[in-house]
Length: 431
Image (cartoon, rainbow, N blue to C red; front, side, top):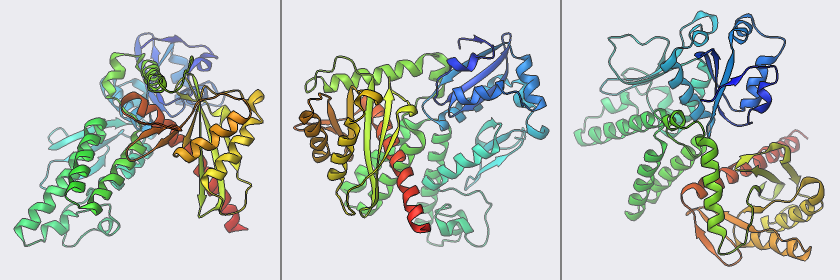
């Protein structure tokens, strides 16, 4: 990793994206941390009000390095890997002098996923991960994983555990162990072990292979007309996509510190290539995406998120409270949004590409009003199942890097729209 000499303004050159940062004393790593926003997190180390340990670490540090990644989960896994590799002085001196946290997958008939402060040398484990300096982050990640792939954290008992009743320990080993029918018992145990294997894949950052396996399983269930089971797998895939975003094995970042920028460039290049037969886009840098959120027509809102060079730029994020009467359609809402957006071409700037979450109707809403105002900006829609780009007269299947960037932009627009929508709903309920 390229090192930056530490000055009071060092943090200003850092990007506002997820990643890990390393403080060095000469060539020795003395602290490794992770951040959702590298610039904001590292800037906190230059605050005048620092805890004694943190102040001592910063005064010892001579250089800083960082690596950008795609999500908080990826940053957490990479941070743990680097800490285990280098055992930096100030990471090992954990908060309150406690031992850092590990995740264990025990080697038992029904493996458990548990956390521990120490890993005994003679303990038998299928796998263990860490050390993780933040127990709060570890438990948050395990909570998200458990909702997708239920697992047990308890030893066998005479009755199913409490978590089995809310689907977080399913199938529950205590319940499986009581089954008398050998065939059913064996089937349930295989189901449980499959969940453990999937948990291990997530914690090992093997997201691509795991997703492919789930997609194949969903396709097989659909062909057998087991649509309810297929829907369950589809929901798992969507949840997995949400917590991971487009991912890469953590060792790739260690091998190529410029991987993040290279990946973003590759995504934009493929997207531009896909659009070339339809739109002549000379320069593709700024992309805006619009999404509408409402509950049966009530409290309708819309979001505009802006990505520049493949990276979210939140200074250009905007919320719209839809003013039309209750019950308006998404297409009508989009017409209102584009009309209001055009009033700010000069002060907000002009995008190279507009994406709308939806199909031909939403695309036509935008395109028609842009055309009427003599503004030529390419507009595409993005639809799911399967993921595809939609224009006024074309549908383009999405795969690879182009899908990664579009899914990331769409998910961010959806999240931003829902945030404002929930705020308005809450106001209505309180009122």
